[in-house]
Image 1: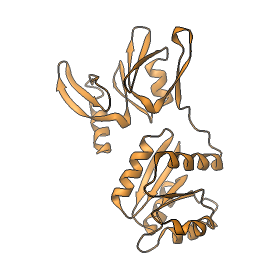
Image 2 (image 1 turned 45 degrees about the vertical axis):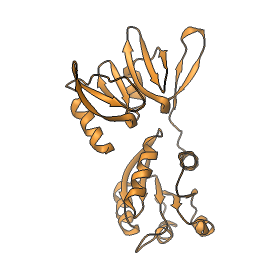
Image 3 (image 1 turned 120 degrees about the vertical axis):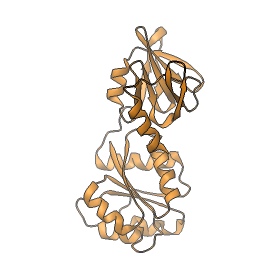
Image 4 (image 1 turned 135 degrees about the horizontal axis):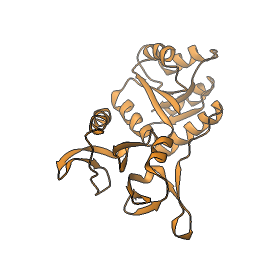
Length: 234
């Protein structure tokens, strides 16, 4: 898991970056800072692997923070995220792994984080499930999954607009990808970043899932965890 600290003086920019990171496997946002000085304190306490660092900030700006970190053995990897292209050459003098121009795209962010993982010697977690039923194999991108239901001997995977059957159990998937899926019922997992709310219906509370017409029932045991997740995503 890649521990990431977001450093930007603008709250909307931090929120957007957190959302982009939540849509990709293997990322943990360990904290946010609104200034370079605040980031210095959080780096000491949280020990992040990567800084997603804005350049233009009041007080200690991104270049000033990178300068302070440059010769530290325990310094996190730096990826600059800025609206200004003209700082690129200066930024790489501080051994930055990446330089992303706002608005940052999910694809460019993913590429920069891949470089950070290689630099840190970290392997990317498995981002696919394999469906081997019916005599052929299809790889399922975890990012396309909205929810999974246990049915008889197999698990049904709900994707954007279609379903597939796999022979992995929900427990196997939950243990392998705890950052991706939340258990809402003993027979159902839902993609964390697709949870949009709760509604009362037949059989109790149901979870609302983005891009999925299915509304899985939430068990009483799992209801507190689902409510906590909804608050985190708001």
